[in-house]
Image 1 (cartoon, helix red, strand yellow):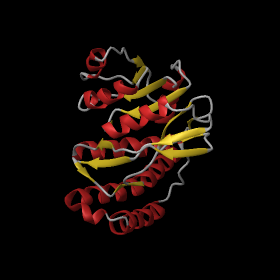
Image 2: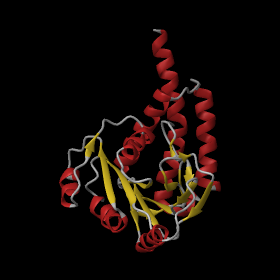
Image 3: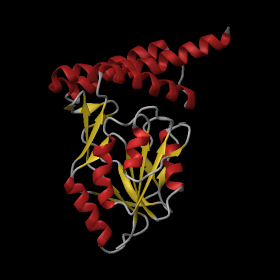
Length: 253
């Protein structure tokens, strides 16, 4: 048996936080919460679970998670976001891993993450299909998160296994949040990653995204929500080039 530290990132996460923390408390020998400046009831809820969050100004998700990992006292960590709810089967499977023989240090475990948009499970949300299987449980001495500004991932492992169970990723609970996060993601992408400014490329990318994510990736099967996720894919693909073009043009003046 080995002890497990659980890391959770929060920012105005009160909507789901109790549902997120309840199952995590069953498996956490140590719970670390890093908050980036919540103004809702997030901090109060954390206190109810006996945790005082550590504040860190947000830069990128990967940097935020690596900071949380740096605070733990155990070698093995489980890293979760505050809109990801693990079910009881996932809890039991993690308990089995903890109570079994020590995994190889370069071994990592993936969760089965199902994406929900506006309360409905969807086939995809650009740029991933649902479910996806991100690495979330690992030995911190071998694995960490990369520095991509968007869609970062854990890396450094050699082998992985999927933890049986169902993780509900309850993202984008309102139309407003869909496009608010769209704006945040594309702004951060252009800020931290070089995107060649080109309106023509943006239009071509947007057209391709519609066909790939709404038609071929079965977004159309999700009804009205599929229209939202299809629009999100188109807008994301176009806006990153639009913002890069605008910034490039603005600098010339």
